[in-house]
Amino acid sequence: MSITSIRLSDDMDKPLESLSKKLDRSKNYLINQAIKEFIARQALEDSRWQDTLKALESVEAGQSVDEADVNVWLNSWGSGARKSSPK
Image 1 (cartoon, rainbow, N blue to C red):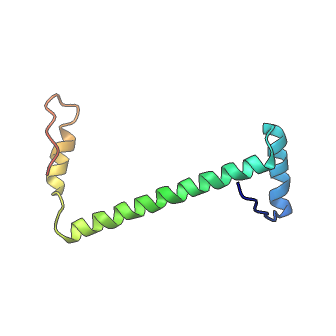
Image 2 (cartoon, rainbow, N blue to C red):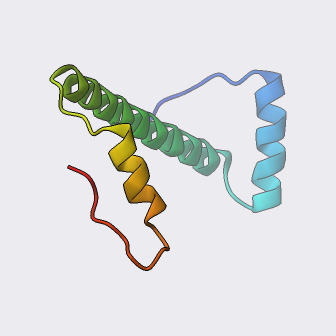
């Protein structure tokens, strides 16, 4: 485990101290949790961006499904005669 120091402004430190007492957790624990969640959100955002780029490439390559076919498929949901997804 590495050690990193940070400087917190008063408007961040006081609520953090309060939350730390309320949750009976150290400020260190709360900061680590916040960083862990931030990194996970950034990874998810990056993954979604990569998916978007792939989707744009497939559209540019003409690999798309006609809207009317998608609507027919979606409208079949819950009808008892569900159609297979369009290709």
